[in-house]
Image 1 (cartoon, one colour):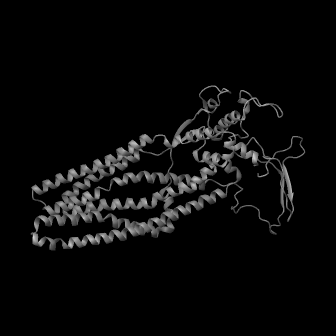
Image 2 (cartoon, one colour):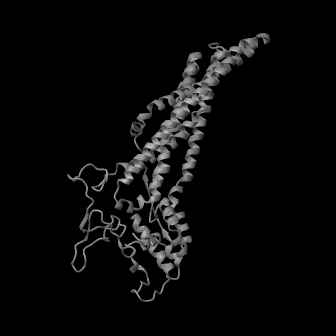
Image 3 (tube, rainbow, N blue to C red):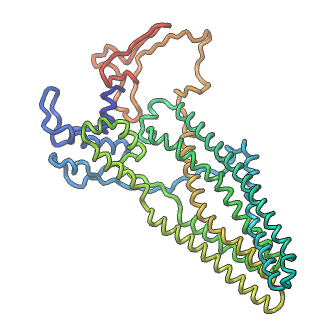
Length: 477
């Protein structure tokens, strides 16, 4: 827990580091060290980082004392696992206090969503008047439709205000609530819990900052976008059915084709969690490196730290080319479906016009309503990935919150309570302790001569006690 311990850990050296595997093991104290500190630090760091992650390293070549870079080069084992997603119902339960704001946001999104098909009605009527009305009557005939455009503008203004206020407040409060819960869960853990690499400062700050923010994509602004697009498509098909039911029915049959892109994306783009055994995570490495930057510079480990950080970023970049190609295919398929729908409804409408079953105004109104409703459907597929990302981030947060607490939980109600209050006396009797990640190294242990069986200490009320000892002897513990 002292300065020397921090110095060693910043170099990647732990109590489990095995120096016997080095080709020139260190001599006893007082002897001469034949190899450089830089070499020993790099080799020990290579092994200890692997042991922290529980992975095995495969060295590219035999270790040579004269080749420090060869000693540091490792091949990490990459494993892929399907990333778990949080339950949407649990997120909605957490958002229950803000259901009123969610309702306002949903109402505003639906208002904005039905406006484009309504715009198609007005546009079709104005264009029809260009062909059917005399020039001197054209302005008077279109006046009502022009004023209705102003009505649509007012509706868009108020709808966006409701949507913005509702989903912004609900998303922010959900993020704040998650941060409060996960931070409380962290504070209720014992010291040993923070000794594991997956619970480092870098990892935990990522849960608090980045992951909590990503959760808002599930029921924040992204939810508003989905409702808006669905309302647009539903309103477009409904208007088409009212004005020319044959065209509307053809468009309705094309909806599965349009929505098929989202289904393809869901099947082909399952999120996977890529883990590299033999390396620490990038947040952990960054936090440790910057916190111990003085030690890194003192031992000349800048290049090694940069190389390790580059390796730790590989899981995040793995498969990005394939994901990008799939995303492009899904978006392209959605556009293909939209234009196929246009072709079908224009063909059906043309046949109806030739057979004089509908007039030009009815045909054009139904076509424009479908066109304005279908053009925004591609955004659903793009938003699907963001929703999956938010659910994965929520699950990582819930993993910390749901992890059982041990008997050292400071907020648990169970346990003995003093009847006459707390007097301030503290007593330790024969205490033994080892961190969970280093179970074979006891900070407090029985003495070799058998005089004591553990750490013992008595502090009387109102007594001040100073802990004095060499670095790393367990004062902080």
